[in-house]
Image 1 (cartoon, helix red, strand yellow):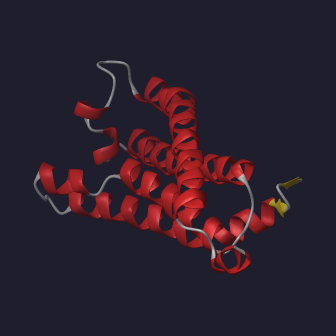
Image 2 (cartoon, helix red, strand yellow):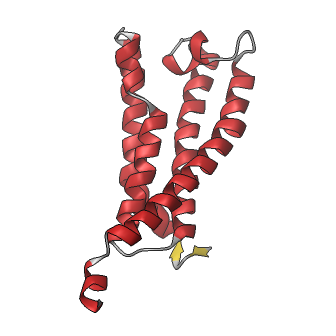
Length: 159
């Protein structure tokens, strides 16, 4: 499968550092919670914010490396949002299976009295869908803005 001249392997190769960033923030959040850090400190290690920053960084990488198009920005968004939601779902499932509470399965972040399965389903449906829609819009707008305001070096010479 090739999108905008870049295959799935090319997308993944471009995004590996960003996958690592999201995973590092996810692990940091788990460690901070397990260490008993204040909720405000744990809240700063947000996987959602790390995902949004990763989408912006992916678009910047595509622009400055002259890779891809708007469709590639959308594919990158899908991959990054999916990765972040999978990590969150893994943490919720781990808490449900082992009985060891973690920040991702904490009652203040879970649906009231619903249990882990609806919480997981919410992440795999609403959070995934909303993240992809908003992230794609943000990615395309950012790419459009970069192309208008920050031309790449070879484009400047041609002008």
